[in-house]
Structures are given as structure tokens and as C-alpha cells.
Length: 250
Image (cartoon, rainbow, N blue to C red):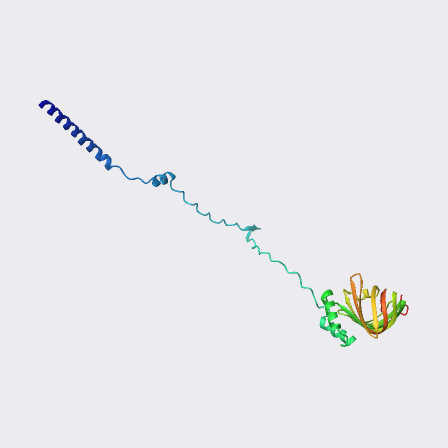
């Protein structure tokens, strides 16, 4: 029994010695364990990003050499839109001047005349010539017209002008009165001395007012008539302008 106790004590002693030895061995190992952040390990694997490349300095353009002398290239100026040239109005008549002339021909009693001329000018623009004069005519199916006046040209000045106007159509009666003609695109006064086709409606019962549109080539004539008489109908024909009075209407 005594021998068994001794053996048990000896075994417990050896176990304690082994535990003590294990503790001594484990202590240095535990002291060397460090806490490690996994993000640091991942970042260390990625490595430090390379520095951004430095901006290359601008290269200087070598000057152009001509005949051994360096010259600088001219600076390029920005393109600017070129405005279209303004239309010259020096060779056309002003609206106020034309209305004043028309009132002098027809008198201010002609109702709506100024407004009528104003509307024509808004639509057609300003003329570079006009005619003022008087005319008379009559018709019985076949009609005749005779007139005379003054051609006023913005560049070439004033000159006498005459016209005749044969016509045909359901037109009966006679009339006489004043005439005012707006003339467009007459750059050479010689171009007006020719025949211009015409067509109009006429209605005079004691007094009347009518207008007609004539054109040949680029030249356009807008004829305004105010007069007295007894005439009713429509007709087609032409107006023949001349430098001298003509009795034959053709």
C-alpha cells in the first residue's frame, strides 16, 4: 500500500513537471503573437500605386526660316460672320415724299389714297421713279386713252412723257382725270418707252378711283387714277409710252 502511494505521488509529480515545462515553452510563443488587420494584409498585396506621370512641357514651335531670316507665323484670327451689305435707299423715293406728291396731284380730298399708297409701298417696296400727269379716254367695246405728264427719276431727273392706250372689252363710257404711276426697277429711263400690257376694271359714276398693275421685264408700273366721268366695264390692252405726243394709239 505504501509502495502504491509512493508510485502515485511520483506520477503526479511527473505530470506537474510536464505541465510546468509546457507552460514555460508556451509563454514565449504567446508573447510573439501580434494582432493583424486583414485589410492591411490585402492592401500590402496591392502595393503602392505608381505616381501620376508629370505633364510634358509644351513643345515650342520652331520659327519659319525664310532666306536665312527667322520669321514668326502670323496668328490665326477667329472667323467672324460677314454681315450682308445693307441695301442702299439713296436711289429710291421716301414714302412721305410719294404721299405728298400724290396728294398734290389728287388733292387731300381723295379718301383713303394715302393708306392705299402706304399699303403698296409695304408690299412692293420703294420705287426709283414715278409719273404724274393727266389723261382722258373713252370706250364702246373698243377703247382709247391719251395721256401726258412728267417722269421723275431718282438718278436721271425729270423729263416729259406721253402715252396712249388702246383697249378692248365690255367697257362703255368716258372719263378724264389725274394719273399717278409708281415705277419700279427703272435703272435706265430708255426702258420705259415701250408697250406695257394692261388689264383693268373701270367704274366711274360722276367720280371714281382705280388702280392697275403693268409689267414688262423687270420694270413694274402701278398706275393710280382718280377722275370724273361716266364709265363702267373691264378691258385689256396696253399702254404705250413715248417721248413725243402720238395721235395714233397703236
